[in-house]
Length: 360
Image (cartoon, rainbow, N blue to C red):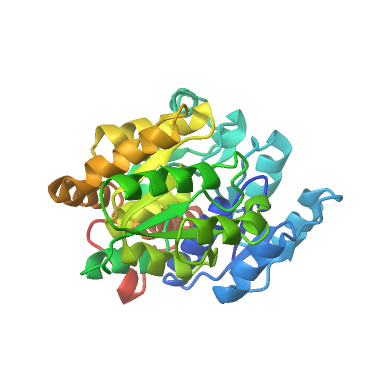
């Protein structure tokens, strides 16, 4: 069994949960069941139920997490940690004792205690940390680059099967599971402004029922003559992306999902850390980045320009899929299985046929 400790809640969004589900799906191909451990956030728990995941280990916010994690990891062969905050030295040593340890997108110095560090788009600090001295005789392996972004297999398949889209074309708007900056409403105004100027288009919003913006959306969407809001669910985003001609997104996991589906995206950031992820994607021609200082007018102009150039939209879709092909979770699972085989002195566990890939 592999234990996957992930952040959850409105303050962090659903990115870690989504990555955990993707890695669980890929690890199942190696005969390794995965169990998630997280705080009892209602939206995250609903996602796990809808995805058919194993019952999670619940970590109450008012109790120390480590004792429950160690009890749950007693029979685990590996632990995956996907937290926003830096992993502490005590946590890293305790969770990695006698087990493989994979740390996801964590800027803390204690990642040097891990076997694998997943940094799909390594920032400067993460690159600096690659020079840290490994602890406990471990040789830290860094999995760096968009090829390692963990996504569920359904997004790759949606990209493979992407065909004709509805008419009028759909612009998908999603500002993540929490939208702490309140970007959804100004983004909708920007889309409405573009629609007034250039063409007929449909607008679809995906949002979390628990986000503050949810209560205001029905009235705003009626005023803008937009499609009804779609609640954020794990299996619905791929359907919405498959139907979208263009997406307007805040920087997060959904951007990578759109890239794997071949959907061109206009991306806005909330914090300076987002820029480190957005810049290389924009430089590769995979997204249009509006940075942090965006406005309704700038968004409308970007939408107009993309709808005026079908060739550019197609090129962006191809560039996105070239960077994020949807096989990242399988690549990470293969490396983790190899680490565990090396630690136990056994042969590497062969993947299930559907997970095998010469490029892993």
